Length: 450
Ligand code: PLP
Image (cartoon, rainbow, N blue to C red; front, side):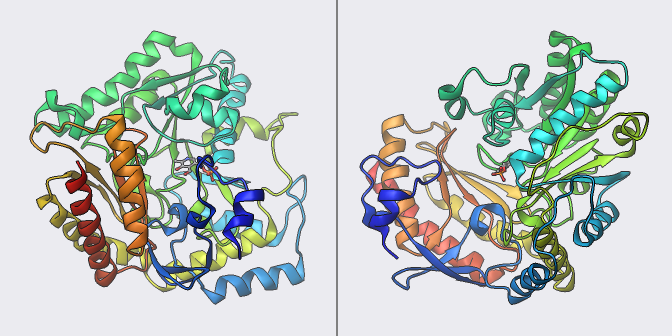
């Protein structure tokens, strides 16, 4: 499998191709458990579960067999005015697992499409219920919600958007919950949470409550490095959403299916959203599938007269993907992976916390099997890197050093530089220690370059 051909014909996602040495393009050919192998036979610990997806680990024959069985029986049929058994069964299963009355499922193909779907549904819901002006969306600074033009408009990363403006209008950003970068709140996380949640109320007031349809929030925000919600944050957000009749959408494309030790992240933090958007871990990445979970109140106006949600896609709820999802949920249940994450997350966290003795490690934060390690130039002042240092040390050294040492994870400098870890949920102490050791070596050598 030639990396040269990859460079000639295959356009990699989010990748700077100029100056890319074809020999530097890793070609991953095989996976088993928590590990993947490249074309040269070198092994890597998959510290990112592919891309926050492979909950049950690689190479699980049961999922391949479920796909093969379904392909032999009914390889494809759409959900346009028809149903098929695996979609029916999966919808029922998700409805049973979801919090509160989220008991209707609209299938998509990806996380971004789930976000698009939820925004369109929110708009039409308000049209059907006599509030047609409510169409805007509030989301948080740096939050990633997808790349299609609607989802990208909701995304809060300016660098990901600037070349595609004008995007879909009507999205507004509020602060995220980066407590490490909120020194004015001292160590009062609760007050910080209240402040951050109240920014949503303020944005609704500024825009006009009659114009705002929804707030999109991740339970734990990925971009920026695993910003967990401060105590009381979601309780206050729910209150604000109820006050202004604004829908709360929990974007759980990463945080569902065990990533935080629960079926859904909303359960962990004790809030009830109006919709959940999800994808990735639903099939452990073995087949593309996304889903939007919708509560009774939102579904109700679509049950009368000629109301139709004019939305869908050819492959949304693909029978093979749904069969894989069912087998994946069986595996998660049979192997007790939610319980495993809840039991071992403190071991994972405390293993990563050991890195705090390094001068370059400013913060280690996250929950479940989902952590971000923020790198700093000065621990005391929390000073971050200049763009030149970030380019030289993070992009030029850390990413390569980690990969060379056999750890696949992500060094992300879209905000302050962080290393993101979200391994398969089957990982345990040996993998946590392997990650810590490889990170320790790479970050120690990075420090010497500063
Ligand atoms: N929403 C969140 C929170 C995500 O993390 C992602 C992708 O990582 C998306 C949406 C987009 O999902 P996809 O890449 O499947 O379109």
